[in-house]
Length: 210
Ligand code: URA
Image (cartoon, rainbow, N blue to C red):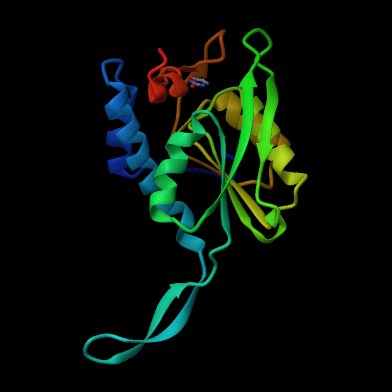
């Protein structure tokens, strides 16, 4: 496994992912689960955030207490399913800035087509977390990170929930410098570019457009 690939296998995440996969799981539950997994992932991914110390007073005594030094995060959501991860992350990091990349997969070629791109103007001072639940062929993730690199953020991490081996290979080949976080690596892609066994179309399940 490429050293930049990190599979977060916390039992709570694995349990929630199994519930998300089930065909009978409703849109309402799917949404809640994706948000909860995103919260847990955020906890792991932000382990390296720097803290500084601030002199405070508790009701009983003064103390030198840690607070996060570095609030310069931008969460870049690949539309539309990235929204599900974004919502969870913003709950833990409400001060994060937000960017959007609109890409759709051409159903015939599976090649991503960009239709929207908006990130903060001071992106050069920000650490970017690019989010999309599914890393399938890797085409969208590769294109999104490529586009984001052209704006020069301080750093980039890519975060998904489920990855296919083909997508990981593609992504790490093009972007070996970018850490990739996922909660599971599935078996393979089918002929339509869906992850097997996977969980179906994440956007459709999240937004109830099945
Ligand atoms: N996108 C999805 O939502 N699901 C897949 O299985 C592959 C790509």
